[in-house]
Amino acid sequence: MLGALLLAGCHHGLDLGQTPAALPAASMPGASAPAAGQPSPPPARPKLGAEEPSAVGPAEPEVKPRPTERVYHHPTDGFALTLPPGWESDDRQPGASLTAHPGRNEGLNSAAGVTVVTADTGRPMTVDELVDTTKRALDQHTEQLTPLEDKRLQVSGHDAARLVLAYRMENVGRLSMVFLVPGEKRSYMITCTAPKDRFDALRPTFEALGASFKID
Image 1 (tube, rainbow, N blue to C red):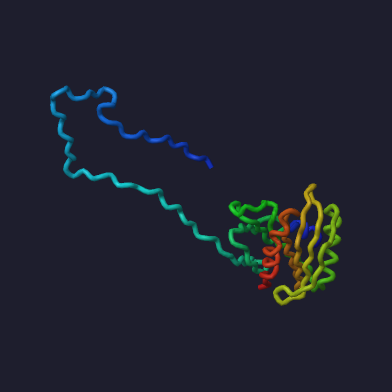
Image 2: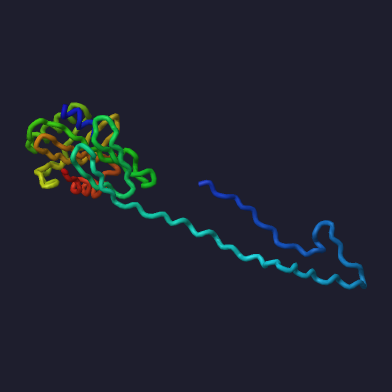
C-alpha cells in the first residue's frame, strides 16, 4: 500500500500602414489652383472652441505584481509547505495529498513539480524502513532505477531522509528528489520530479521545498 502511494508522487504583431503625409490643397484630387491675377483666398480661420490635437504617446505597459511565496496548509493531513512564487497547487488528485507545479507563465516544463503523499502506517516507522520501502516500490514500478544520493537530515524537527533517484517512467528519463519523513502513525513523502535536462536548474527549488515542509 505504501509503495502504491509513493508512485502517485512520482504574438500576433500588428501590421500598421504608414499614414500619408499631408498634401498641398492644389495637389489633392478635384482641387484647382487660383486663376492668374486673382488673389489667393485668405487662410481659413480656426473655429472658435477648436482645440489643437495633442500628441498622444504610447500607452504605459501594465505592471503586474510579482508573485510571492505561498504557504499551503493541508486541511486534514496535518502538514504545511511553502510553494515557490507562481506555482499552482491541487489537493484533489487521487492518491496524493497535494500536487503542485510551476505555473504556465514560468517557462518550465509541465512535467516538473512536487507531490506530497501521506501514508497512514498505524505505527512509528524508522527512516531506514521508509527508505527501504520506497526503493522497493520504485524498483518494481519504474525502469532503470538508479539511486544517486541517500542523505539523512532533519525535516520539521524529525529524522528524515533525502534521496535523489534516476529512473525511466513511460519512456521518459526523470530525476526525483524524495524527502521521507516518518511520524508517529503517519509518514510523509515529498517527491520533487523533473525531466533530466531540467533537474539541475530546479534543484535549489526542490531543496527549499523540502526544507519548508512542516508537520502541524
